[in-house]
Image (tube, rainbow, N blue to C red):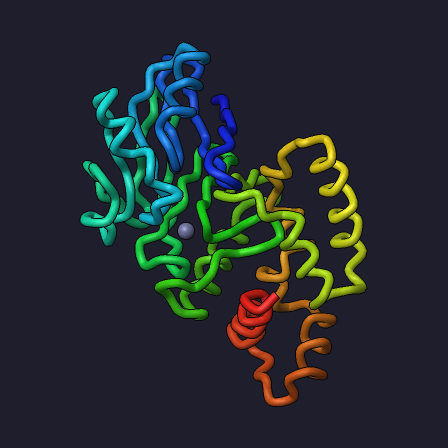
Amino acid sequence: MKVIQIPLLRDNYGYLIVCEKTNEAAIVDPSEAEPVLRQVEKEKVTLKAILNTHHHRDHTGGNSGLLESLPLQVYGHKNDEYRIPGLTHPLDEGDEIRIGELKGRILFIPGHTKGHIAYLFENKLFCGDTLFVAGCGRLFEGTAEQMHSSLNKLQQLPADTLVYCGHEYTEKNLQFAMTVEPNNKKITDKLQSVRSLKAKNISTVPSTMAEERETNPFLRWESKEIHENLKSRFPNLGSDPVSVFAKVRELKDQF
Ligand SMILES: [Zn+2]
């Protein structure tokens, strides 16, 4: 299995997933069609499917253009049947899909939108705008409870799971992470390495689930430092994981 990251729009990432045995491929979240078609041509693969994580236009904007050029299957959550252009295969939690000989499993992870899914192929997680490197998506359609439970589902995946998210937001996310957990050395170290990658114009995505558990403030609702930090600023805040998560999300919205 090969994954080719394609930078799209300003800070989106599309991912071309290739089955190296059959040369068949799928594109995750094509924001636009042209750069995807160029990459397909360059790699000499047969594009078979579009895998949308959710309906937002910066993740589906290329669907129509690709469908004009190629007959493709279009996958997305069943809640988004009328919001994902060209959807042919509505999916739900636990469904399996195939690209050549590759098998992908669907995880239903609402919160950012009510029809958000992730695609898991081997140890590679394509999670759209739910989990970012050191961050998470905004709660546009879902509740903090839903998002917390979706993130909790993702963080149960093995430590070596590679996190392929929808945007290059890492540096800003880590800057925010430092404001809620300033003594977490893993965060300061990671910010330093991310800055040197950015200076060389190298992507900071993917990361691993192990790194996310150590540095992502939206997975660290058990962190003593985050609890104490929030309690000192918001004495009435509950100490349960959902309240902590919801407050961190609220602070990030204002950051
Ligand atoms: Zn989105």
